[in-house]
Length: 267
Image (cartoon, rainbow, N blue to C red):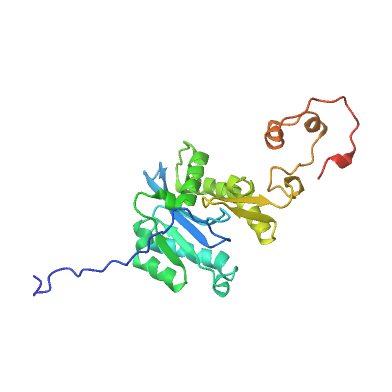
């Protein structure tokens, strides 16, 4: 059969570079980026939908996400084209000489020749996690746990309903939800403050990293932080809500009624 050329051609597999460290400690945004795929059951189609998430490990910001009944190499490539256009090119990564590391598991979508060649062409360094070591891709794995808790036991009739729910979730995650690993700030606000030099980064002996804000939380403006005190009515001032107690600590015993000046209510 060999002499008659009846055997199938054996294609050589693309060599893979595996992650060197389980704990990554990037020094700035866009240095280490992780991606992974999650599955959600769709009742009408009686099949799973695929959710691809691409997250920056430094800021915890979701750079791009997409959902569909298939998630092939071409879909992953399209997602990364958007990441390059919307994030890497505006940050001028190539000129600054930033070494961008992309972490993913050994899914066939990520290990295809198309994807590996695409990353090399764009000077992006792809590394694969070792089998049975999800901690090497821990940031996006943790994110998908948050997503699972948010979706709960909800049943989605069609993919449109799921897409609508995901759109709200990703928006709230990036811009509203406080993240304990990034100075108790939402990812987008943390990124903005980092760029302005308002965040302190400290790395400890065990490679653990902690971030601290240079300005008090009550001075943060806008609605991104729950520590911003909104304009409150008289009832809210007299009886703080449960959310106010949770954010600002125990409430002191109620004092005799005193006429308050409007200046004590920041707007």
